[in-house]
Image (tube, rainbow, N blue to C red; front, side, top):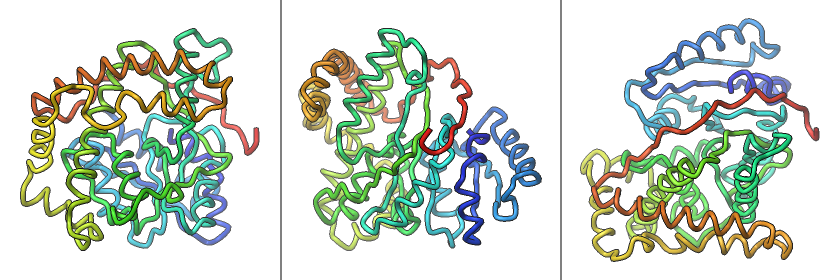
Length: 354
């Protein structure tokens, strides 16, 4: 990921405007050599990169594990207070198009309504010559998901710094922060109805990630997402929206204080929510029907072509929903299965429009 990152045109574009770019690798309680590898690459790029005079690179090695803690630390403590825009990206993606980050930044700079810009997530199997039947179903499922408006993928996005710094991710929020950030950003901190225009999809921008294709991996990933969406539903729809306006407008402060003064507050809300739910498929509205609703947004021929993927995804969601319900009933929220992956192959980086 770092090698593909340093090949981005963003750094040349910023240098031409006399703008400094800070790169931070936040190692969140890693027990492997992540921090050491990142430091070695940063040191080498600091000597060799064409725009090295306009780059500031360093590694922050946190003792506490968890992506949410890393997010909070980066946004509120580590990143420069002078930064106007923050890119958040996962360590297991590749940037094939050299203009991806530049185009994402441009999308925000030229659209005053948008608070977050995204690129297009691409599964690695999209670039295979002959995908298998399961892989074709996975690609069709992506088409269905892509038909919905205002989709935020936590693997890579750019956010206005002043917006990010009014967000604090609660410590017990599962690592599905994209749903929470979307709700907060698109409602102007829960003060109005959803405004999809707060999210902007950048043109000619994409990243590649390794797809889940085995049935067990798909169901486990669905279980993780259902747990996350359940918590987001309870947190946003049933609790935060009922708070006084002043507390919603100062959301980061409100959530930090809740975590400090009453650490189990969110888990208590989840327990109360589950006591009201007799059936596992009613964890939140639209749990089993949202795929079919997204399918309906496609043209007629595409709906027919994607129908098997929609039905298969709904079946996987039903199984995963039952598993998620059982896990939540035990009081557990932090579910992150070990991914069944082979490793993301190195893909050739390409220029704009290729």
